[in-house]
Length: 249
Ligand code: GLN
Image (tube, rainbow, N blue to C red):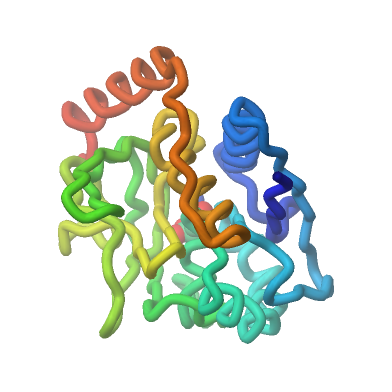
């Protein structure tokens, strides 16, 4: 089947090769006989709340976030409706911050967000940079790890009702002190992890694809496992790096 993907602001929010996540989703879908139909959604573009099975937004510097903030805030109602009706979201770093209520830059300027997630972010003086390793449980009883790279000034505060994506094993995470990283609300997954994220965490790519198909069909498919030796190697190398040097000042 065709999985309809909405890629928000690919021209502005795409650092650390974040668009590589789309390539991984497309390839892993194709290996299962499905096709990704990717629509770029830019400034001033209309957004239909039921138009996509998966919505993706990458990371970006403060400058780029400032350029798109008013526009994504304007799409907020539609994005909240999409999340409420079960669309899958993957948001990375700057995109993660703009799914919240606001991002306050170091200058004190407050960039409005889409208000899809109950959280806000405040930029601090010291950037949080390095390899990260998380432990998360998207499905009850299924503990998995996510390995990636973070580089952000923002400290994200999860508000009432917000659930973290995972527990920090190594790295800074949301704020360098809470011990949590990212935010998860049903099928909405938001994280600081770049890399890009999905090549070294194929299980999450498959989870996102399966949930996107379920958004369309009502049933979560069971995928045949793929020969992920290379991905598993990339994951363990990244995890080892995080354990030895993640979260260092
Ligand atoms: N500009 C934001 C920050 O510094 C996000 C950075 C990013 O996307 N890597 O926190």
